[in-house]
Length: 564
Image (cartoon, rainbow, N blue to C red; front, side, top):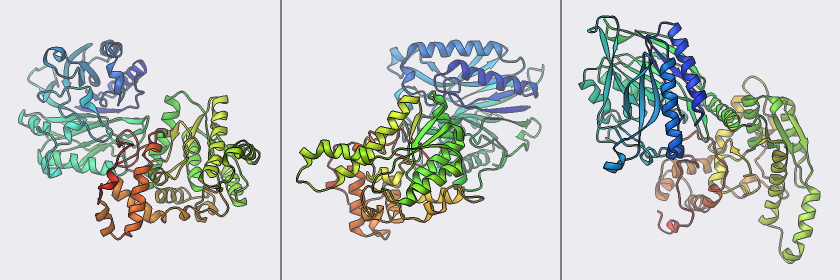
């Protein structure tokens, strides 16, 4: 029996076009003799739909689309479609109003509904806000011939349902284990509809977990994952299937829509080898693909066709320009150079060389006169004070205002170019370089920015060589270097990783070899910069702990007085 995985890229809320994607996949699968087609979690509405789920008309339209889709599915094809369904007992029992479900479509009808049992409420997930967990795991029978005794039992799980094997994790995160329950029901294999957000190296973890479960429970597993960018989240696809021995027998593409087919042999009671797409060769290749996908989909799904960004001649804006060029084409990217009296000659020439290397459009707007105008207006108030951060930040805010003006005038999306290291410690200017509709590398530490640029230059020069070797500088005052205010980025990024991602204490970070005064300084900067991060544009997430949807820190707090 042939099983197909439709690795789809839905747009959240676009029920009609999402249904059309599913139908097209169904028609293609049917033409290749497929009997069962899997789609991702919430494939009809897109994941995560968030508070769209509070809109009753949205739920009703989803139900109508499902019924219409069921009527159009080719005969002799069974399809599992992800959607939200209404919990009819909610008002009587005090339960949550919805279920995160999978609908079984066959012969023009909605044959069966399965609902998710394990609802994640950590990091970027907030499913308990909307959904009630299902009470039990369930399966369906798929007939192989006209003989009604000739069938397979297929266990259905949805995303997190596969993530609670206490033997693999060494701990139990939920009270139940749906995989174990389904094996007790005697199913022939398990399918999983997922919308698992990307972070780098996550596929290795997924596959280790799925391989363990398939081998330990002696059950084949077919896993269908969403792809695409939705706001700050990217979904990498990499849908995969494992045989009873825990060996990969099929893998779909990374960061691309795909339709892959794997065959289940009823006699062997196992999945047969099929096509296996290789994973990206390096972390840099993987992260690059994720960021390109994130920019492409955010731009398209928000209704933009062109982007604009400021080009300083620095490494951050150079990387963002390269990502944007790959994502939407060089003809759709505008880089703006805005030199000030403190801009070095090489910053201008490096930016111009980048423009030529990428083939993008550019404009140059000198800001000296605008700076003089601000100085003149503020002179009565600033009299008797020394040049300082306020004057430095004015330069950044002038640039941000000019970029926003151009973006508004021509309907461009402004891309912010700040990295995670800067966002962590507040080395960025509100209403200046933080302006924008999308922060492309806000979850990319500075050291990773460098490794990505070196990787990008592996075959030819894209990022100018001088950009890679000159000391980083905001160039907001004479001879300024980042290291005047911050520790070296190798040290800073390690402290940020330990404190933000690994939740290590001040004492643990010091014991790892860092100077106590440096650690205290960095932690203080991270904590005090919270008000800035709350006002930043969405930033594409590539790590476990990004300053986005899953970051929920208070702004006004006194916990610095108690940390150790």
